[in-house]
Length: 422
Image (tube, rainbow, N blue to C red):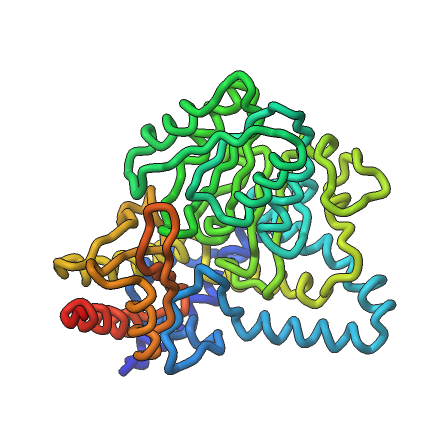
């Protein structure tokens, strides 16, 4: 049971956080509350966060890495903007809501620590990154360095570019998991040649949650005149960083993952001086414009989805980026530590916050991942079995609404499966 004192404390902590954020951003003279205590392990606090969602009370969802649910405030915003659009679509969508994209651009820049003039709003990480992949001015024989552990959509896009234009793909097969940033960087650098024009970096490997030292690789690439493309689908609004600090020239992410924005929302970031020479994926009046908006000529799209990104950002700010990361990393380590003594279980994810966040990956020896997934699903625990380039097991991705009691159900189920291998 929650004591009255603890309930009152938790009920006031989030508004206090909002006031502190407001003061920090706008420099007002309101009295600033003391820095909030660490709530990483405060289940009462996170239970209140969970109540802001409409997630199933019976099904434990541990596949937030695929797509995250939206808080109720985001769902309500989508409905509200959609209803407004339907009153007079061409008026409200094209004359009212379309202008609202500028505010969303500014809010994304705020949490990305970059200029709003470098951000384009689109539908997902694949669209953002393929804008870069197909828009870069590469010639036959130019080389691109990428890894076998990158996301399939990006791999296929680069393969198509190679097939169509004769560019050369130089593959790295990373030895993961790893807690050696220098060794990871070395694997990329050793693949660079005089013909290398681009390096593709997946900041967080989606399969196992490995954090790649993007800045170290980017610095080495820039010393050689190589452009840097960063896939931030699983790091944006998950890890704590400012986009320019990663050292990239281009970055794409999905906002419907860790930001918990509406399904089908994404973002492209292009360093200001790189915008002019990057061709847009969809036709633009001036393909060599220096305006980031040339990448937003998508035709008719869901303006309701775009506008509700704003509510998702507000929710993210309410929790706080550092507080969110600490909780996600804690949850990952919580279940991994609980299963660490189970002999038949093998982990493929670091418990060091420098090399892993909230995504974890494990396998049970002598049991196929698909079978483990089925047995967990029979207990109303949703995970994703994975087989990809040396990785064979189960990916586990909790979120801010996940409680340790949810993970206890998962832990007990995995122990039972491991004990009854068949």
